Image (cartoon, rainbow over all chains, first blue to last red; front, top):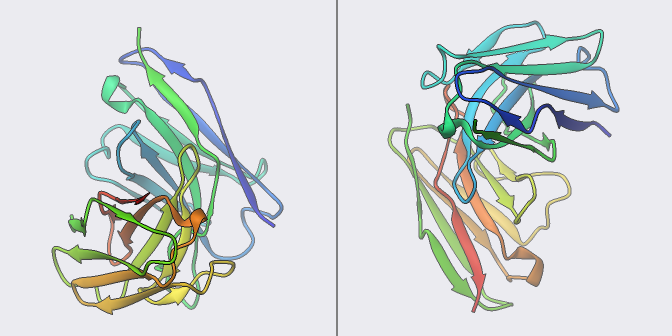
Length: 124
Length: 107
């Protein structure tokens, strides 16, 4: 079955860019109809949706992060990427990627496959 | 953004208890409401989607109901492996938003 694995630097300096990759295995990222989402969770806190990208490349972002975030897909590598610019300590969190299946034009059935998450700390 | 409010924030229960968690949306979201379970150090796991559909592999003791603004997650007979934090999430519009979580602890 499909598995997701996040990777990237565990430590990022303030004002720099956080770059993470979600590797998709067990299936082609471009087959089927899916949104690929990024979600984050500060230690001891709740879940925050960052944004998502459709297989075609169409994106939606959380307005609270929209000016700093970019999500892209590389079908040749079967990967989804997250870039978050000008990070601060408030961006310290566990970052998850997740799959959101679409069926019959509806993509509202929840995120059914999640990566294990990767911890990112923003500190000098 | 649609605000999601869960209650209670935490609860203590015993194995075998029936547990109900509620989630309220700040506006009508039809039935576009999902429930996740998260254990410490693990990723969330989808339990219920579109308010009442049981995700494949999720135990049948979990059930969901509701529409509009008010939703519930029920665990019919609490098992030891159910002690976790539960989140609701609306999928009516973007940005997707989550409730603050309900931690189910052992009594």
